[in-house]
Amino acid sequence: MLDNRPRFATRFGVIATTVGSAVGLGNIWRFPYEAGAHGGGAFLILYIACIAFIGIPVVCAEFVMGRASRLNIFGAFRTLAPRGGRRWAVVGGMGIMASIMILSFYSVVAGWTIEYLWQSVAGTLADIDSAGRHAAFDTFTGGWRCVMWTIVILALNGVIMLGGVQKGIERASNWLMPVLFLLLVVLAVNSLLLPGAADGLKFFFTPDFSSMTADDVLAALGQAFFSLSLGLGTMMIYGSYFSSRTRLVRSAATTAALDTLVAITAGVIIFPAVFSYGAEPSAGPKLVFEVLPDIFNHMSGGSVWSSAFFLLLLLASLTSTISMSEISVAYFCEQWRMKRRTAVVVNFVLVASLGTLCALSFGPLAHRTVFGMTFFNLFDFVTSNVMMPLGGMLISFFTGWILDRRILESELSPTPRAIVRGIAFSLRYVAPGAIAIIFVNGLL
Ligand code: TRP
Image 1 (cartoon, helix red, strand yellow):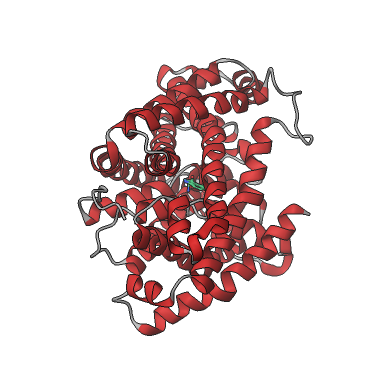
Image 2: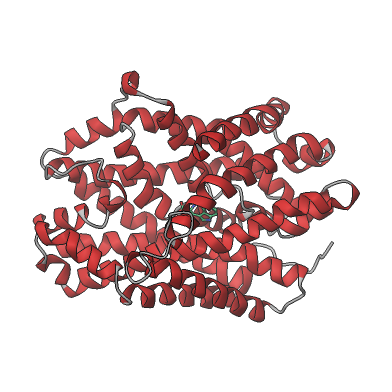
């Protein structure tokens, strides 16, 4: 085992980096529209149950595999599996491919946030009326400008990655996360003071299970996985940088709690605003890019609020993109013996090329489809519906059934036995079973 590997320097750094990975577009862009489309309060409760009973155990599983092997996901499976782990290493390979694909389309959406931030600051976002909002979004996402922003995101990401684990990733997260929390609180207070805020809160916090369907349950579990960055080895690679004294269960629980808190706060920012201005909560992916700018437009000081909001989205996405890149960069360094700088450049070139295909999926490449999907939709579909659930299921199965039980127990200690048993139970039965159900349903 390589022991000149870097470690996160502080406990704050451990939480800032893992929460930085977890909190992203998934919380602020995806969660509100999923909750809006799947019934508000009832979705929230299902989501919290998925995080607690499946999400936290799988985060623990990734931490355990990372710290026990001190390697990237590919190397972790190879060293921890019995008999050379050749078969299990395939799961690692899949995680690396998936991380490159997710980063490719994720950085496109992250790029959109730069455009919206830019326009908020310049004041041009306020010049568009509600009727023109949709066309403006289509024109922008259909053009080359969004390719430029995708590359800018990846370049920013690359610069942080070049700094390495402590001076790049940890330092950036230590700065960005507190700013992000501050912006969240300010925006939430603003929303709560809007007239009619209570209706939004009622929608978001009052559960109505009567119209709940299996589809809503699946959406909640899928969202929990995406939001906790599970299934591809993100939490695994971060776990591999934890000191041997870091408490895994406690860190997993803290990460999940803060991630959920951010998602809830995003709901508290968005739903009162949506209801206060009579917009539709179930607007889907365009909720944040078409509905919100319009709402900000009607608020006093609207451009300040929209600048703060899109800055929040941008910072949140950056700490997530670095966690996705670390999966493949660590793999290139450790398995292919590349220098970090070379690995960062290789990763940039790869993702920038695929990212360009995704960015152009809304315009020039809209008619280039594979299996009937544009590149953007294909990458999103294959990663969210196939690779992430499959990866998560195999990671939990592996730590529950294949990994030496003593490794699991010693990595999780000191934690009360009952909790360790509960985690092992979820990893053996609950997590793989539940994920298998979403997986099959997601494909149907
Ligand atoms: N969790 C992040 C979000 O909510 C996205 C993310 C980061 C991710 N790393 C990941 C998703 C790895 C899946 C796998 O936006």
